[in-house]
Image (tube, rainbow over all chains, first blue to last red; front, top):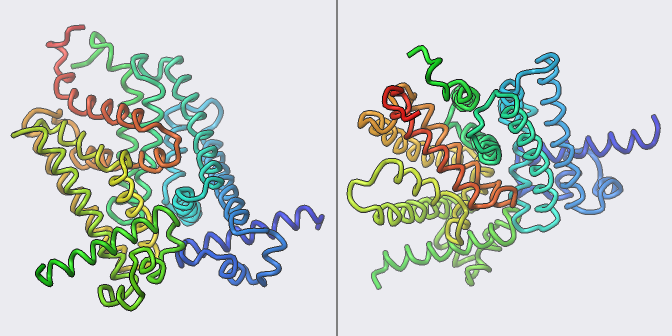
Length: 209
Length: 209
């Protein structure tokens, strides 16, 4: 195996070990020593791949984002060519919720990371940048949907984008068993239905009522 | 000072010290030793008030919930007697966002607690129970607003309640500087406007269009 690939694989193995520590033991246990143990290597070996806890955490978070993006991409491929923007948003939002093991691991990792960001400027900037990029993509999609007549022109694209992003607020509610996964998906569907139906609803003369 | 009151005050002092640790140093530092230091007491003195880290965390979370409820109550009092349900929801949602120091401290505490809940059944149950109670209150309010004609009868109360709760998803987005506090409030207003306007919109004959 080329050395570069091997290096990357080892780092991914460490990132997954880190996720398991977050998931099973909590961020309190998130030290390099514990992660090394979980990854089945010595602290010295771990330090060969990551010079610091922050560097390790930063990679684990990037890797979590990549995995989430890859899951969304696979979901979108199933929609075929030129998918409807409503379906794109539905797949994207659903993949961000902790509805299966992979999504749970990455969403817990993100929650831990957001908490670290509160008292670490480098982590804060990395987290902000990643989410802001995702936000830009969603806003582009909303603007295009308005231009294409799928969403009513009186909807403000920035506000609608912010509301869509806020729906990731279902994550802790699902994790804490306050809201069932199916009920969260139903609520997201209702929100999207109204967002996309608005373009039709604004034409009362065509109403069947 | 009566002994009971003094005991309670000391526990509140400890809880506030714990919040500061979460806010300034992160959950990784959340040990009894660090909290004792932050509260200006010995580990032995702290253990006089809390037998375990979990007991301390549990009290700090209850206290955070109480403080949030008190802030919401004070906000509602300003609305006068028989406030409009839209205003009640607006005040409640706004007070749950990290828009000022008190709200930030309690919301960071809640985020840390939600993360602890993932690998501690007792914490999970306490967190679930607290949020589920809040959810019930919101659903009662939504049902009453439907009964009183403020919200259209074709809106499903459970789904609308879930969407309102999901809007707490603005918290990490504000904390990470992805969304400005004012833009989050604007988005919440837009959501509430549509929820409450729906009762009128459904009557096309009275439309001015």
